[in-house]
Amino acid sequence: MEKINKLAIIGGTHGNEFTGIYLVKKFEKFPELITRKNFETKTLLANPQGFELVKRYIDTDLNRCFKVENLENNINLNYEESRAKFINQILGPKGNPKFDFLLDLHSTTANMGLTIILVNHHPFNLKIAAYLSSVEPNVKVYSFFNPGEENSFLNSICKRGFSIEVGPIAQGILQANLFDKTEKLVQISLDYIEHFNEGKLHHISADLVIYKHLKFVDYPKTKNGEIVAMIHPQLQGKDYQKLSPGDPMFLTFENQTIYYQEENPVWPVFINEAAYYEKGIAMCLTTQESITV
Amino acid sequence: MEKINKLAIIGGTHGNEFTGIYLVKKFEKFPELITRKNFETKTLLANPQGFELVKRYIDTDLNRCFKVENLENNINLNYEESRAKFINQILGPKGNPKFDFLLDLHSTTANMGLTIILVNHHPFNLKIAAYLSSVEPNVKVYSFFNPGEENSFLNSICKRGFSIEVGPIAQGILQANLFDKTEKLVQISLDYIEHFNEGKLHHISADLVIYKHLKFVDYPKTKNGEIVAMIHPQLQGKDYQKLSPGDPMFLTFENQTIYYQEENPVWPVFINEAAYYEKGIAMCLTTQESITV
Image (cartoon, rainbow over all chains, first blue to last red; front, side, top):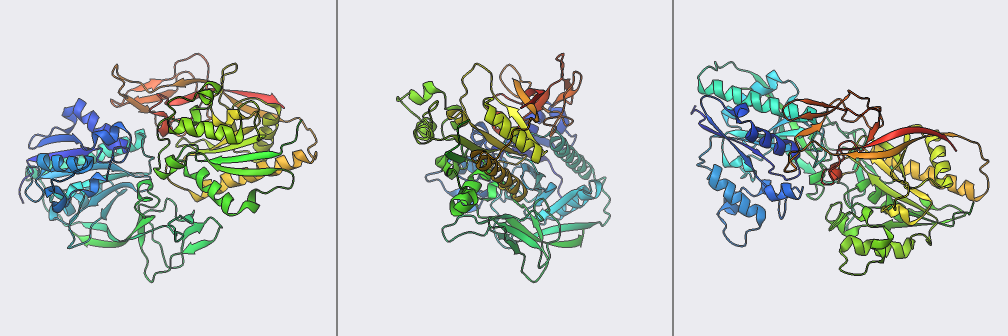
């Protein structure tokens, strides 16, 4: 497998997710923290105007702007569409990128701990994910893509790489413990890549638990689109825990419980993510699979 | 003391604080929940445009717009200044209001549990605060005003009333358990006022612990205003707990601890409130006082 020569650490793809933004600022101030002997590391603050206004985005979600069709469009670009093209010029172009590995730093109001989000199952991604979740057992791996469908995330510019999602944390704040955990995961990732480049990694097959994206679930709503129920208190904060048929899912404002009624168990993630209210997503359902890599 | 004839429950003074907004919506759908036999209750969604865009405010913090000087101004009003005048016309005018009691519902990313925020020490406010913190021992009372200085909060329209602050909760989300706790506190408050109006409250002197606003503390910053430290992990979430000289307060990005170095202990609140980053407030320091009411 080809060595990794250029790696980019991206923060602030969403302007109100401070953990990644201040990590990038820290790495820019202390570049020795991300310097490794056999590859180049670049940092990038992806949505500076969003950060200035402490908003996820100005016009549109930047992390949904990376389909080739969007990147090739030149007409009437809004702020994030322009940024996506700019980022694609620097790191990409998508499909034939100048960078070999992208590490995109995010945070969530959901109780997802440290999550590695994959946008494909490139063998290297699976290997580094397996390694990271073996040395940091709290790390979960979420495959957030539909096979055969083009992905629109920033990470999709490049075959290798992943995003780190850390939570629960409110938008627009820093929490020292989560900041530290995220920084350590970045460090371990860089060390792993350094060793990979040196040919020092002897292949040992490892088991990896992957949470595969199945579908989105919206909040129960009126015909006019008004939310009529909240995440059930028994489900709140239970990301990556098994939800079985008959388990409570929502609680209406009239205190009626709505149960999960599909046939098969699922593992919900992104439960009660603030930025997903407007997308009509109360949670993402996944299936849990164990694979050997 | 005069009876309370008209009471207003206000939600969404900050457009991204969903708990109060959806409580107001619930009360509007089920008015029997807030109907009591001897006073009238009105609900008000204070910042509808803020809610629509899931922003604390459009132009300026609505809950800092209620000084008489601002309310009398008619020139070049921005959205929240106009809303403040409108709200003052409906509920006020400040100093001679049509409403006798205002209950303003807020939420915070700080770990403040259920907090009653007072903008004055009107005897009725102290009595109801003492009652609520006796029946709900987790309820804290925070006097968030400087004596002798005009207060700019919505609550300052009216002598009687308080705001409820609930947390920790991210902006732009609902959490069923906090929603329920806040609703119960509103219910108990309305019941208390109903009994007060009936003359059924026999005065029993009670002890009340009040956290009195002392001062704001900003994040350590560079000369250019860049944050260089986070809330120390040992202080994060420790609202209402004693901070003694020598205790950790901040942790710099270089992992240096900054200690609290004043002479006297304090009780910090609003620790790591997202909306206060732009105000230059990392936390509010209070003194703890016990009074008999």
